[in-house]
Image (cartoon, rainbow, N blue to C red; front, side, top):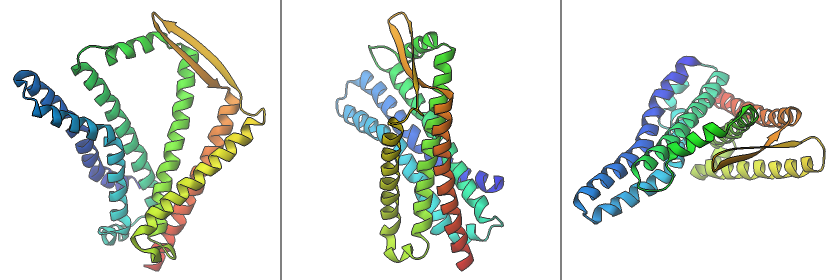
Length: 264
């Protein structure tokens, strides 16, 4: 599985870097040239680059999805199907790739935000914001942040598995009879289903005493942080529920991928 992950990682990281960095570099270069020349048409290029940069994380994720689909169910499927990996190893490598790419996209997004702030005029600089946050965080706030990061990572893992499931089911019987629209229809259906389940779970848990919060507040100068923290039992319940969803989608994707390989 490690070899397969490294192979698909090398293919996808190049696309992510291009989408995440190119608009930023063009915007910074355009801003620099505009300040030197005061040539107004350049401002349009800066605005367009900024717009693309805003949607760069989504574009990068869409690019990863397209590569994943072509790799296992499209143009490159003939090559990847012959590799000596089980369906579980392939599904695992795909998931790890989505998770690592998501982390890379997140890091680049933060980097872009900081770089834009450093090159812009006026206002509170991003580094100042990070400085104030660093001064404000205590142990309780830090633990709360770690909990929320884990929960967000699980939400993203479920989202990635839904994308994978839509690709796999859309290429498998009987869904492949729907044609090219199968994967999009399945993705929308799975997202709506998962959203419905989330709403039902949230409304159900609100009526119980299983989920409890504590409020933490701290400040440094004019900057303050107020955060609701899940107690450990509530955190464990949420993590368990999300982990069950993730395992269910992993099993679904693995099953249909295995069936497709056996048919071929």
